[in-house]
Amino acid sequence: MATEKVYTDYFFDEPAFNTHDGGYIPLVRPDVAENKLNVPEILEPDKETDTDMYYTVVAQEGETQFLPGKKTKTWGYNANYLGKSIVFKNGKHIHVTLKNELPELTTFHWHGLNVPGPITDGGCHAPVYPGESSEIEFTCDQPAATLWLHAHPCPSTAEHVWKGLATGVIVKDDVEAKLPLPRNYGVDDIPVILQDRNFHENNQLDYLADYDPDGVQGPTALINGTVNPYFDVTTQQVRLRLLDGANRREWRLHFSDDLEFTQVASDGGILPSPVHFTHLMLTCAERAEIIVDFGKYKPGDEVTLYTDDVAIMTFKIHEFAHHDLKLPEHLVDIPDPEITPDTPVHQVAMSGMDEMVEMNGKKFDMQRIDDRQKLGNVEVWSIINTNDKDSGMLHPYHMHGTQFRVISRNGHAPYPNEMGLKDTVSVNPGEVVKLKVWFTHLGVFMNHCHIIEHEDGGMMAQFEVFDPDQPKQYKLMDMDTLMNAFAKERGVDRKDLNIPGMDM
Ligand code: C2O
Ligand code: CU
Ligand code: CU
Image (cartoon, rainbow, N blue to C red; front, side, top):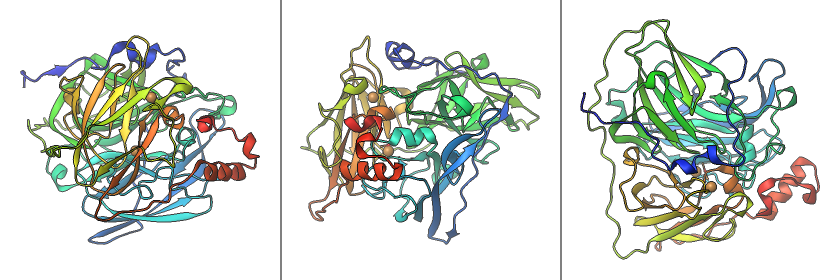
């Protein structure tokens, strides 16, 4: 359709882009051979019935050949680095055995999944100690979406993710299944997990050596754990499930020839209508499913994906059957419940940078509940980034336990690709973003900046979703217990424990 609007800018405030940070580390395309993109295998269920699915997720140590020469010591979920993709079907009752084969405690957080907190959700209150396992179960009750699983043992989340503990989670449902979208996993539907790392001597990672309280970065892009990747295109359209899985890096994506693409889903699922772009920016933890149409290319052509001006991936065009995808103007209905009358507006202020980061003027405390919302209520959360407009940074704000709607940015309409469900929304310096938030499960949940060093550094809080008819007591984890466990597992004295976020 010639009348379709095509967006050609990144929306966010340019002075706040990470390229302006003092500690910014530009990506450098490594001088190594191209590698076939790793497409993570799908995790096979241990058992599946008409109503239930059973999985075992193992956090394990491994070695990964990222670069020529020595393999890199890494961590992963049922894999050496990152993990197998986990597929849940909406409506099924899911049982997961969480197994920790690492030398230290970790947690298994289901980012974007609507499950009870704080144990099933898998934040800092749910450690699984080395050599142990625990069982969770929940009913998958949300629309088709690209979510993810990552480690969340505060304040060591950033280091665990840096070592590789993150993987894609795909929710499927009957609504998405009826849309004319590519969904042949590995062929025309692939996860694209965007990360960056720094490789030290013998190709090893060294988180502490690279530590930066504003977020750890490295000069080498890894896509699904592949350095310098290419993907063989054998269909006219390819669906990319993009995830910013980096600790700090923002991705400003565009293709060679300024090839247009279409976003069909955001964090929490399919958008109400497709949105057409030439440029798309993702901040930490955000997801976007995009459809790229290679119809104008012929076998032998190559299409390059860039972030800023650095090439990060090549699409090699092969023979494909031509068939034009006709996406309907309207894809799905997005729930938009009425705000519960006479409820207060929740205020969240993200302030500071470096070690000074705080939320509502405080550092995170896992024993303190900072806010409460009644189960079933629909309430407004008002998120402000108090950083200076000229020198501040974007803070991607994330809430556990919900998929929310973005109401406004400084009183204006949200960006055109924010009309669906979200669990992470980036806030410009000086901006107020209003959210409409509701919950379907009880629990204690966390809300934080998803620059992972900021959350570890204390730009994080927690809230309780409560029901006056079923009051609950939660046994919350405390810093001492976690620190003592880490010290014991790492074989050091508590006072010699070196976890950068722990002084918060
Ligand atoms: Cu991606 Cu607190 O999580
Ligand atoms: Cu989360
Ligand atoms: Cu932040």
